[in-house]
Length: 330
Image (cartoon, rainbow, N blue to C red):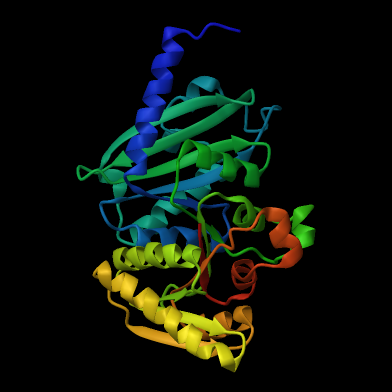
């Protein structure tokens, strides 16, 4: 077994200290790919993460380029602030546009203290690069250019460097069936299926109000309700609690579930504005009643990936079919 050097030990301790520091903050990863839908992800991140307790990381994943197709870029250039490179690379344009969107939303980090970092990756001349802006209050905004074999794996690998509380992606142009996604779904669909943290699919509901929080009475859902309610407080949105009974005989049980969730939030000093129940198919009813809200919140089923694919998942069905943004809490 190779001997661990003192340098490696110190580096590991620094990494552990950094991860521990990050665990005490609410960290949002907004993924951009140049599409307008992806910039909605940045807008949602800005509106949820305005507080000093929140950090926003804007990520673009660039595919590995062993052939130096990026214009003969020199490694020395990559060690400078990537925003000053003066290169017309798509990834840089996407990140700069993400920064502009933050400014449009009232967050202007360019006046904060900044640091840059570079890591060699995959033998690519560009590697991984980031610019971090840090406010005196502790809040940070990071622009991250990540190099990976494909976009989905790059986003999921970025979680390991986080950790993150929430990933936000723009709505994909189409959704495949769960089984088809197993063999080659789009980026957003793969990340939604595999990410270990909560995932939001951003849609055109930025001008709507309210967190529409769904619950089925399970302990997992109650935990999700608490987490989503805290997020609603940060974002300054009213809360609606919603539960679906599959038939009329179970409607009283749905009302009871709502009351239990409301009581749990009252203990947290969080006010519920509305309570609703419905009868029918959970996916259909959640999509129907949640459509006029800023975001619909559902809890992940907790099933394994293959079980969810072949037995179905309410959370995944809502994420795929809703017309407004959907947050799946994990």
